[in-house]
Image 1 (cartoon, rainbow, N blue to C red):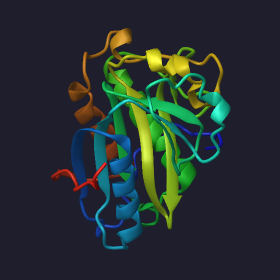
Image 2: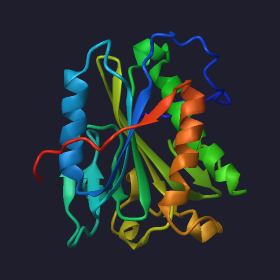
Image 3: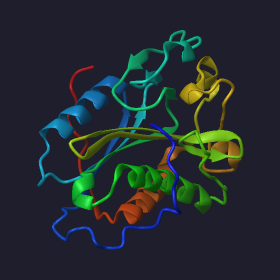
Image 4: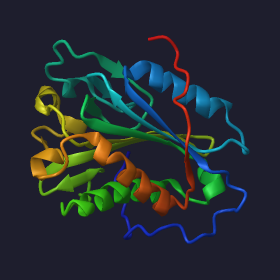
Length: 235
């Protein structure tokens, strides 16, 4: 996705329609990538103006994903890690255990939020979460995502179809970062990556998930209710 200029993202001012149903939070645990991808495509294709928004949390089995504009030459040495071409924006990234992947499945028209504002708010949710552990983070002009110094800690790759979002963010919490050396992360040769545990943060995603969801809900004006994990197609 092209870089955007973000004002300091502020919470929704309460103007979202009162008819917006609560967003359903579904924690899928650890899953292979493709069944989750296919499930969120199907959800987005089937939803209508009355469908509740959903937030899917997942940790993926190791995988490299290459966005629609992704260049194969940015995948340097995939080795035993599969590479999947997907329908999100952006270049190549890595998903693996110890990383929070959050898929906000939101109706932007109902929330009265544009795509650029959506991107800013998702990035801000990660920035605010890091601040709760006294980790200073920021956006970086020309390179979407969230950075601590020169190292990337949160990536963003989205798709919007009929005003509804799918795909989402990847937030490095406590993971093996070595696979990032097999790619040019997000299409940038030599880009450094980091994770919360390496910056004095928690040793696993469980402590971070509710904090991240809380900030995202606040920034989008969502009421969130827990729901069972969705049924997934066979891998």
